[in-house]
Image (tube, rainbow, N blue to C red):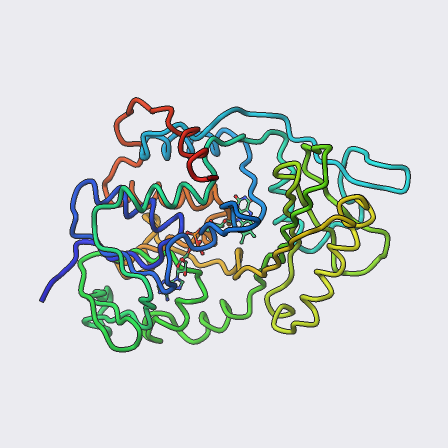
Length: 376
Ligand SMILES: Cc1cc2nc3c(=O)[nH]c(=O)nc-3n(C[C@H](O)[C@H](O)[C@H](O)COP(=O)(O)OP(=O)(O)OC[C@H]3O[C@@H](n4cnc5c(N)ncnc54)[C@H](O)[C@@H]3O)c2cc1C
């Protein structure tokens, strides 16, 4: 029977950051991904003949954000940060465009998701998050299996004080054994794959009931647009309903990406998702009528939950009383976003005894070359 040193569940940014770093020390690492491709929320999509991020992406230039990116740069040996710039979001009112200063007394319920985009400074990137995950996959030296949905975590000594996780079951029928397990899928998945002896029914129910937000995204291709508007836009519309504002950016002069959020329970009704989409489009039409008239292609999608339940972990990020199960869902970090993914990955690596910073490497400047190649 083969026993892997590390089994990583999920090949998103968190899982691949951990997996690639671990595989520099041992190739006996297995990554299991449920979908037919890697990348999770950051997998690339093709829109209007270009690879783009799967929805709007923003990276705040905070001290911790820059530190996490510096670690990733060392890991990839590439420069990711192009520059740091001011972030001055704008909004639109009857009188025209003006600086966005806040929502006053009408902050949306998902303000925490939005506030991330309002950071005073932002990182301009050489390489986009969809490229980070591709590069991590290329550099990973272990085994990666797609279409491998982990359906159960199997234990030895379930009744003991510190039970030992020994294997995972994939697609209901295939078993993989390991010494150490790192779970990086959304936290709610744990309620289905952990036995009740490990996660009791009350905790499962609490996690399943907690609010989590899904992003409703619209990508637009409007090739007649000539004036490039650089800032982020927060559009709030005029109607006082509870659907909330949307946020967006012109990625190039002929493409823009927009998003808003919806509670995952409401998202179960397609009608509710339709209302959010309608509102996003109404707001874009109001602020940018010239864009609305010239849309040639649009891409609409609703993400899986990008925020959610809290779970109390041990200090070293393992599941309580299970010393060989690390929980790396970005949703357990206070920032359920790119920064949260990188920080969580780096904390788990440190807990596993790996220096997440790695030795400083001379970063090559091929980033721009890759960007050019990728957009061909
Ligand atoms: C539209 C959108 C816009 C966003 N914008 C921003 C932004 O501007 N700035 C920012 O910082 N963050 C943003 N985020 C959030 C950010 O992308 C995510 O928080 C982060 O990338 C999550 O990475 P992850 O690896 O933790 O999780 P994921 O990317 O969700 O990866 C988890 C992986 O696990 C797999 N998986 C799930 N269950 C199983 C299972 N049982 N067995 C095997 N595999 C499984 C999934 O298929 C997936 O590949 C955005 C997200 C979306 C969707």
